Image 1 (tube, helix red, strand yellow):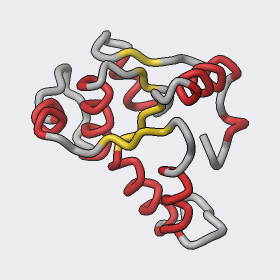
Image 2 (cartoon, rainbow, N blue to C red; image 1 turned 180 degrees about the horizontal axis):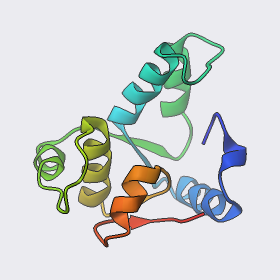
Image 3 (cartoon, one colour; image 1 turned 90 degrees about the horizontal axis):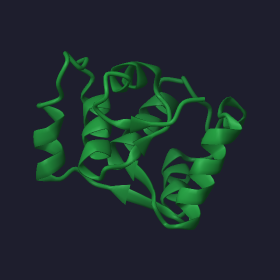
Length: 123
């Protein structure tokens, strides 16, 4: 969302903006770790110290960081229909389920979501 806003459809951008305005834009804390790893592996380019970049994300008005809880940990191992084994994706999806949130992006997760397990936005 921050690094490639042009990759998002107008529909997704409007849903994100509305959630942010209502202080309901959730991000799993594992997503911060993923961003740090992507930067470390040179899959993304962040032009400031990664700690500063991550802090700027969590300080965006309307974003709520959701930490790993016992409910999320338990849900992450109970995902049906052979959800793939990536631990970060499992935590993201479990966080989505526990908070009855709506996922916006991730091809592998959205393919699984099409089976009806979580809400998601297409586009």
